[in-house]
Length: 256
Image (cartoon, one colour):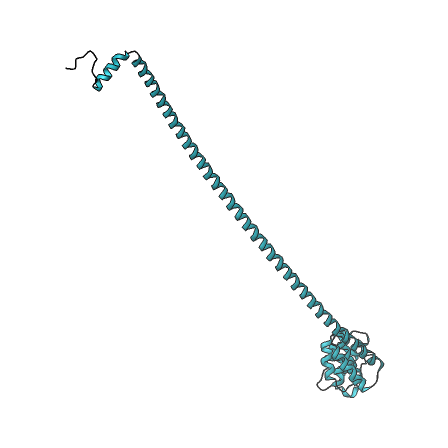
């Protein structure tokens, strides 16, 4: 469906300046200078001039300024309703607001059956379904992504916990190993101390034995020396002296 530019009847224009402006605006529109056309038309804007609003809306639409075009299409209600509603449907379609596009295409078809409006209506319905499906798919993907992220997070937490437990176990084993080493060192130290004490005691015992042996040897030597000295003296004398000491009498001695 083509955009129609409605020509102004000359009787409605108040002066020559307006006429010239309209001619320039129409010429700019035909030459596809839509920005220029919209500005020229807007310079003529008068309230309640729905035909002017319609031409401004068409110029803005062609210039790609859809929001401004919608504002003026609303103001131009009643002017060429089929084209106006159809163009509004096109704007909403381009803005990917397919529900509104379907609404205005349907309104245009209610005014009059039109091949382009019917085709665009079906296209808008299909795009709406695709958009909704895409939204569902995106939501599903987002959910799967979140689940995957939660799963990874859970797995990471599990691994971190496992690492933490492993580290704790290693630290405990190291502590126990260190304690064993310290206990072993202590035990070895005590053992060495005991051995040293034992060796000292044995050394002292050996020294004492040596002293005893030395004393015994001295006594033996003294006894041997004494025996030698005694062997040099006469035995009878010794016996006499011994008996005399015991109170015995000599055979030659008179008892009185």
